[in-house]
Image 1 (cartoon, rainbow, N blue to C red):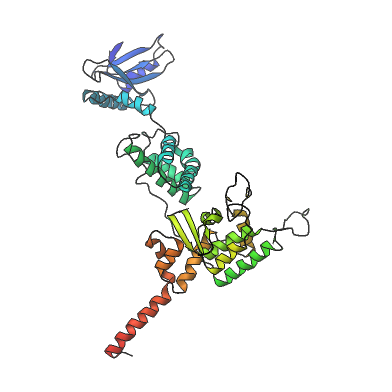
Image 2 (image 1 turned 90 degrees about the horizontal axis):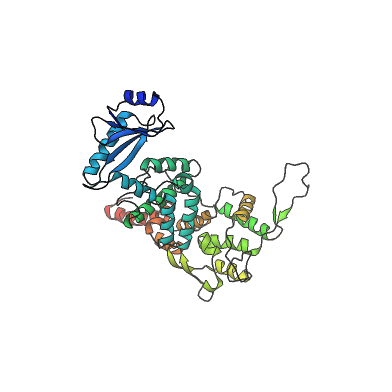
Length: 411
């Protein structure tokens, strides 16, 4: 053991001297407990020694290696560690606890598993964790992640999917709030709480009468002679264009989306037992907003009554009628083909729901009624269609202003 004034020059001198046969310790002449040691492998490491509790055993906290950490930086770190020890704070134990704590992935996974939520939401969260959070900061200790780490992760996620990056931040923030209440992370810790998120603009795409007519033509073609395949540029491709015929459950699902304003999963997961044909209702036990009753039009009932009953689900999937029947997963491929045929490639299936609402608003139906038809839990959600609700408002304004004008002698 040697005592010297630890500085950049003295440490450099020690490291350039002959390698020791065994690990050699050097203590600072001014700050008691601060030092560094050099191993036979020629690695120098700064440390701080202290007693966390008076009379307790001495502990040594590694601060960093020589070359990575400057002597002045190591001195300041040692000063803080020794001062905290005097106040009863054991930084060495803190680091041990930190290493033993769970990762961000484990924290979010625990939140998804234990928090009460809809199964569809749980499934979405699992995908968000696997695709966006885990690749960026999943292996980082939850107690060690910083706001800077999360902001960088959000920026990286945003390069692939801007909106999904925002959803990932919302999930991460909720997981930290949940974890803090249960002691998984320090109280009040939420590095995702104030992250700058990507600006989102509500998409408003409604089908015009002409576009609805084109879609109707494409649906009839799909279920009769079929949608022609896209022509190939290959000289070996057959000259005759092959066609794909889509069964009544595919075209029926699309028609039901248009005629009810339901969400995609509400139609794909719909069971025959939930269809009250006498009263013309769909009694959904579990929608996005909870239990929901859908009032059916005569046109929607006509579609339902015309569908073959193959299994327990209205829209039969590949496993329909089997012991392990499951609802159809999606309509991505058939919708792409049918929408493309109707020259509506920019239209999403969810836009059919918007179209249902826009037709109602354009025809003067009240926003509360439209919200009831769509199953909106929050009236504010229906307000996005307010700008389409102009004619009835103008009629009311004309009626009121007309009476006032008559009273004051206006023309």
